[in-house]
Image (cartoon, rainbow, N blue to C red):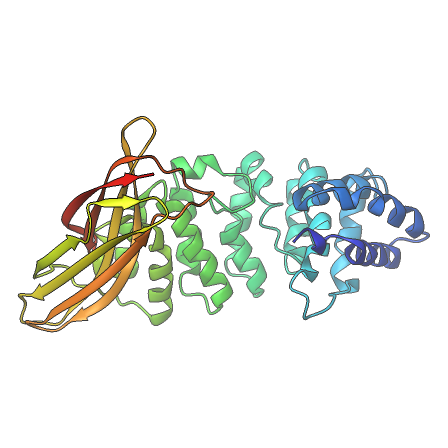
Length: 366
């Protein structure tokens, strides 16, 4: 993605500034912007170009804001088939977070104007941290803006754990201030906005799962199809963790009535690089159709002799009244860079709609 900020992006930044600023030294700017760019990674390129821009824009942020507020009307949007074309606007937007932090009201107006070029979700976070009151009031107003990009920014900018963004620790600890914003956006006409609402809730669920579950239970009353979509995506991390309370919210059976007639391992010893092979048979004892999510949790041995667990997806099934079904599963223990395996006792736990339905231990050997 770093190539989204290379020669073409610098040329587009230069072109828009040349259009707005009389006698802009375009050749000098281009030379300086490109001089060390190729040696840098993506976020470093953003920071580097901000530093270069600072040498060519007024030191008075009010004057710079006047320039930036004209960018959109002169902007070269780039190749519509280039997924990285929007990156060119990133340094211009994040410039505001670096050099406009002492002018929050004016800076937020600039971010609102530019966010449709490339989301201002990173640039707004320092303002939320340093100037919470004015930023929060602005976000609430943005929730009813006519521009979907601005409405999305109201949610995306205040996500506690935004990828690539500085974590907003205050909302990891207490997310209550976020909920009024999401309440206003939960039935937004734009999928672009609703995706942000779902992702925001998924962020919150990692630190405050009970609050997210309670909110989704409330939203699930007289629910629309659009809001169902938000709830499903908002709860995805909690589903993966096997939180029992979330499955009824997603339309799965709350009181599971079945027996595990067979749950066994082909072998209780697994060689690293091979597979753990599992066989499973379920029998319904209900008179109703049951919607089930089958997951399993592997409890991995750690270096200190304790275990850490990870939930893996198996399959979703609809079980008819009195029906018996059988499945097989192979879980790979292949060597990967993201996991360190240790020899010793491991276990596999069967989860159905988040509830445990049996455990088997096995030995991982090298």
